[in-house]
Length: 248
Length: 77
Image (cartoon, rainbow over all chains, first blue to last red):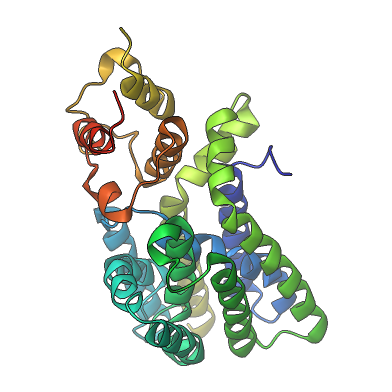
């Protein structure tokens, strides 16, 4: 159905929407509707933490998390674990959590629901709060179907995670009815693509970047972490300088 | 005779087969990042028609370890 869409393309679209979303977040905070694409594509990063079997949080991720936390503290006088910190946390905990929860259907669903319910509150402490665990669990279950099938069907969990993510987004952002309808539709499309992520990976292998545009797309997809750190630090510094100039 | 596993790694990592051996790992090959690892796993599972568990994948931190896991599944490579 989407044999031209590669994993790199999906990641590159997500990165571009994230950067655009941050432009609007920092410099046009009242235009909430401009953040719709960003909100629709964020599940890509969250689900892939669980899907990806890499469990090491490398130096760049720690460095980025600390630097962005520092610039946030400077700007807002508030300690908040940004999304890189959330990634480190989820990467470290996803396997033990899954092995523990896959022992009992009751506890699996109990904690799944708890993660969704607590997510808007937990978001005050670390970015995306506990919904990051719900989404990573969806990725983990999708990748390890055989290990999870005695407790949960991946189809069902993807539907649950999609609803949970939309709940979180709406409670945190308060979108209008029309905006919410777009978010529901868009998030569902993103989740369908992530459900079939293996196909996108195979498309990347079959469809190697040939021209400059495809190579750029591939580069953006590969360098999402670096792009995140650089642009957030840059935006927060610009905002800090602008605020101090207007106050001074 | 061409080594099927090395050929697969060369294809995904986009490195010449001559540059790869059983000691190749993410530590000595910058192309083997977490995103490429996802592609490698998908390619290995498809090529050799196997399903790898999380524990097996986590243990596969060199071509030698990948080979050992596949040989443990009676795949002749």
